[in-house]
Length: 176
Image (cartoon, rainbow, N blue to C red):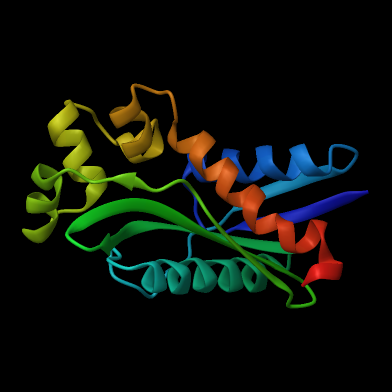
């Protein structure tokens, strides 16, 4: 049986992460994963966990509704502050056709002051990474995680782990 998953993004990294996570937890299923361009209705560079979760939820709902899928998945990266330090993370919301929602996150990685200065000037993290690492469209490649860890953690592996954590709601429904 085919199960249809709509991803609220056309970014190939995010689509691959969703596919890897669903395939890992339900290897016997056949997954049809399709990305769709939807708006997050949050700022281009989210600056809190709440804003990221809202953006991911909006993307998941819109993808689910637009493509009439079994699951909608929204992934939204952004920054959050703890004391004087800033961190980059990604939030994931998975919603099934019955409206049940799972939420998970990627790892959180410290954001250097040098990067934060560019963000405070209005630049998005992906553009900053391209500039500092002499890349082009890094957000559709290794991304911030990969560039800073020399690919020990790539954007794909980070988002895959985040999707897996969001799927916990569906893997252990008796606890939710």
